[in-house]
Image (cartoon, rainbow, N blue to C red):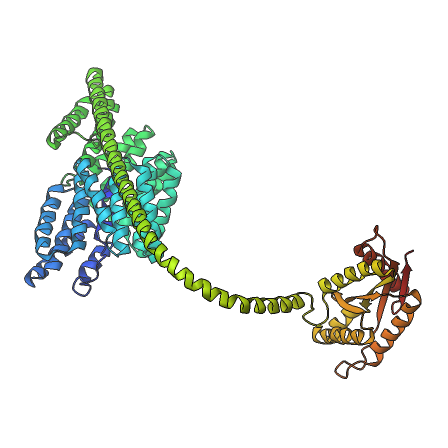
Length: 623
């Protein structure tokens, strides 16, 4: 098995074993530490045996179950399936007495991974799907996230990459919300593995680099060595040989520190393969021989096959065909002992080797045999995918049908309830009508009173308590229409307080507001009862003078100006000079002239008054 595949297993086991249930936190604390540690599988096995013995002597069932699960996962990461199954069976038997649903989920997820490694994908997928559904019944986000990772591992083995990526993103959201860096690292690693399989090496490198940063932060050198190895493999896919050699060398150095012979062997073998890809067979051979020697006692069967075939290719390229054939024979015996074929058998390399040795017939037979296997494997996976889709469809169809039945029942219940309510409503209606009639008259009076009050508020300025723009314009229009009826003249005057901005800038807005209130009160007191002043906007005012004559305008301006200066309240600064300018239009009613037109003429007159020195009145007379 490649180190990439080996790491797939390691990651799935991390997801399975990180504790999600803390009901026995105090007693299981040592297992939690071991599961989260950065120890190699061999070191974990040693610690697990010691801790398991202690819990067995104490007759602590929960600790024993967790110990068997830990041993099963560690042996599985070393690809020793029989040992792993033995410990997993022990965990199952013991958990029947304990009846821990959380541990049962861990055991089933581990069993799914074991079935997948043994090529029993149908059974593995069924178990993974069941585990995912079961995890959603637990109110435990960590457990749900771990099960999503385990499910994604099975899906990517089945080449259901899109499904795997989607579930990994769900798990990542959970772990980021919980700030669980170990699990985030695991998720990023899984995503990198999938993108490597999809040949999207740049995306894979991005996720491996994120995972490496977390591994360094967590001081997890065992995972870091594997990330370096996989970064080397990803850069190899891009044929970036300097970076490839750099990361394989770093993986080898870290494996030496960890005394991880498998990691050393694999990194060394990969360095040899890089030499082979660059036709440096003499340089590759010593590296491959060293890797082969280190794996002699390892259970890593598929890794050893590939390394031996690479050694054979180096000898074949050097013309030593007899030595090459000896390695080929050894690999074929290993393949025969392995039993049933699977996609880990190095058929393609074997076919290339026979072609290099000149045995083209044997090479063709191997290629054809491998093609037949791939076609059969494709058909099997296609059937499994179709079966899975059928199951999903059946589940969704049944769910939709049940939902439809529930809706129909609700409609029937609603109809019955509606009929009962109709009778009750009819009786209540008679009572309510009488009550309503009693309140109607009272509410009508209240509403009229409120309407009058709201209308008054709508036409009144909040600050000065005189008419606002809407109110004064409404009065101006009514006065203009009345001038037509009475055949009298109307004067509209726009007043602007001189240098009002300086008042605000010098004394502040509170003094400015007092000036506005003062002008409004003063103007209101100086006008006749049928005349009105209103706030036109800011420091501008509109004065409406019905029945006005031209001769009355200037005296009115003088009177207002005098009052404005002489009646200044004591609360205003003594040095404050008050004055205003006024533009007036005097006219009789005309169908062709609107109030808006008159206001524009008055505004132009005001502008002229300001231009001519302010503090004055300009009058425009329309025929």
